[in-house]
Length: 215
Image (cartoon, rainbow, N blue to C red; front, side, top):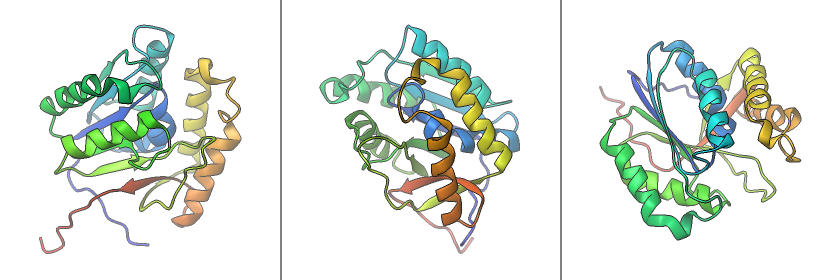
């Protein structure tokens, strides 16, 4: 297993189609990253859930998942499950985000995610952030779309447990979902940990990666 870092990491962008996507897909990575780099700027864009309970949950959760970060959160009101019909609005939101930051790392959905909202947002990100490291996080779901990831962020047992605790604490509106539970989150993290020789991990797809091995 080859271990590569990102070098200087001062700005991060994290995007989700829905409130809780980022925390489910990359919550452990955000905890790890923000603790290692106090004051790191994290710009968050969420396309749906604005103006209600879901936005309140999201803002509270992201504060917990990004301890000590310079956190900027924007939550829009696009209807859940309808991103293809609101493509112009979604594209405008992503372009506004891009105009306001030059990130060292982008956390986004995977381009091959089965959910149309996730997949659509992922497509927008790879065009708006052409020269950036974009890591596509995974979300376990009924569709069975988990694939073979290319990148892993190992998580300490403490971080993996904290991620699950924060998911359970900050998103009460999702507790009724049959897949939203401790076993699902820790189970996937354990599998990804096995794949990268760690106890737990989060895994990511990488659409394109440029190496600088000579410098």
